[in-house]
Length: 623
Image 1 (cartoon, one colour):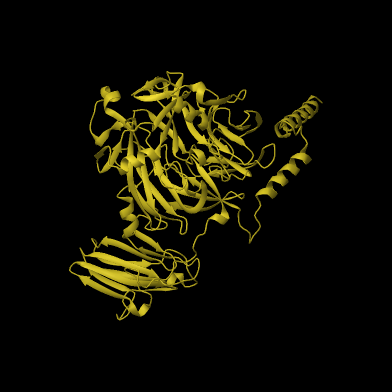
Image 2 (cartoon, rainbow, N blue to C red):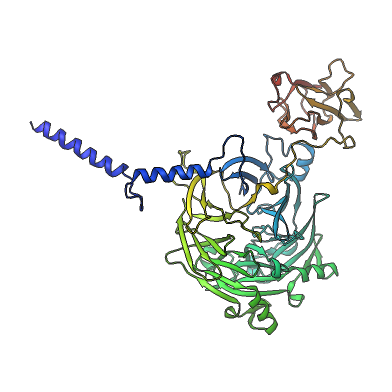
């Protein structure tokens, strides 16, 4: 009898535990499964893109220490493409063919933080995307017609361009402020001489969109502070750039404590047009081939404004009238007025000089402070089309919506978890459209299937079209996204096939023209790839065979003469650790030394047709 009673009690206890574990106790739902199911259905409908339809937006997200660019479609959050930028990519042969290998300059990784789309009149124009490499002091341009990296430039005198990239209103300049101070000219200097010998540097690069080439116009020499995410002015403020600083204490060790001593750091305002004119006139000095100008030597070109300590970023409002800075360690967002700043400059409303830079009176420039109760760790600000700002809160794991003209806090929504940056649709332009914002989170915890200790980072898609924000979905993302920009899909005009150009160097357009030329110990193969064969020498007994001597320098110049959309051919050499791809209508060159004798199969590494397996040849290397 007792056993029967104990069994009943055990069953009832188990049912109670099950109810407690699996009941929907989400605040607001109160266990209403029907309401919850309806909300989930509504969210699913928002992100569903039917077969045959396409997303409304491209989201271009930095790939962090992968050195790559991640491309997503919104609202589906489907990953469309990984574009290799600073890091070799064996899948596409990026960093293996002659041109991309030269562009990478021997580097095998990059740390890509902040993408910036090219702009015309402060609006994304869909032509190019620019990227920064914090780890190796580089800037890159991605051609959005081909989604290929077009150029990479190494920046001298820099200490990690973390605060870039951002573009001026008409992409006159791509600005890249440094994170770490270093001695100018890469010289050795003891950290005991930090304040005297070390400098912060801002590189101002130009990009020729026709030639698809960078040039370094000039560099600014600044105090040895650390510079964080920055922005360029718009409309009436378009001649200016604004940058946040931290470590104005000149700390050289244990920065977590020593660089957080002061109650205030600075927003630095710089008139880039005045400095560009000074560079044009030949002012400054040339170091490592770069013209370096100290803004303190150009009257009226640089000012500082006190701001809550350890700010992460500063963002200019769409109307160009204000800029918003958020202090990580002081949980407020501060709205500053460009108009007030200009007036304070005219009145010389300066409270002191810091390292030779005039510091404007805080109260003369500050428009308002916004302090949402309980919100901790504000990092990054985005905007909509209704005068609202959206701030990520890293510590309290949320996004706060507020009006930058009134300071009124309108709404808050949780994120999952610890958002760094956020990206709103068209959110960095003069015309944000106010439909979506994506939180780029640093943690995912237990949101997805476990892949061991290294959890994926996560992204939250949030609907901001109404007065209240609505969390729609969470998606995993490869490590480690820092920032993204969301561009209307109709602004991006990619090509589907490379245009046939018979004057293109190294290209041939008919299999009868395939041939091999020997120049001393150089062997140049002018070949074609087509479904489903290679032709290297049309007149040879075996046209898909190449025979060379050990030690020869071999050049495979391959043109994909298939001009059908989506027919990419690969080119892999077995046991030679070489692979690259040739897209429809493209010519690519693979250059290597035949340092191993023997017989090496060549095969197409991209599935291109029903006879893909038969698309092969041989490289024969004689002793």
